[in-house]
Image 1 (tube, each protein chain N blue to C red):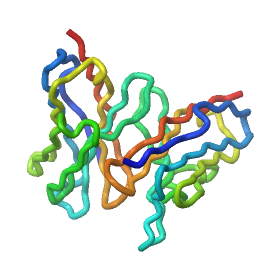
Image 2 (image 1 turned 90 degrees about the vertical axis):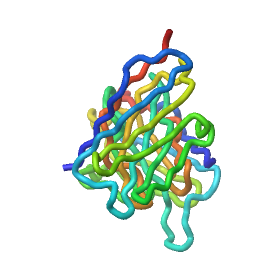
Image 3 (image 1 turned 45 degrees about the vertical axis):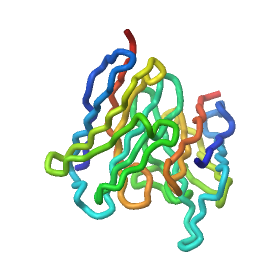
Length: 113
Length: 119
């Protein structure tokens, strides 16, 4: 199984500041035949199911604000929120969908400083 | 629009078998490349991927749980069923079903159903 490791486990950022969450996979999730990274980011607010934010490591899902961006390739990935808003307080998870079983990171809790 | 809804018992006893049903609308599991997965989340803990069934009836399971899980579909009823045998209190979690299309992450999720394992 591919192990996904996120850092940090929790993060406190001031409103309007940048938030950065990292995700590392135990093996590459870059598929060479199409040059795509099979890596997604989800946001989960209390009492709600996860919501897909980013797929193919850097493609925003429809309706996701452009302050959310994803980057990285191979085994190292980053989710960046360029200017933190109060509604961004949530848990964030990365997931690889390169090979089954699809696996999630342990989650990062994002709070307001 | 796409919706998914999980249903099943809220409480099961240790050693019992859990059966959960995901009833969906807005898409068909007979459509090529369509998939439905089950994911769970123990209280205060991370998401854990459990199983996936594809439009062509291919099935995939969590490595650690595969001996206990069975996923199946009823395309005519727009339902996917997950059974988990030999339930234990550590299996207490919110169980979600979610859709994906092709080699892609889950774009639509149900609201989840909390299952508590206790005698």
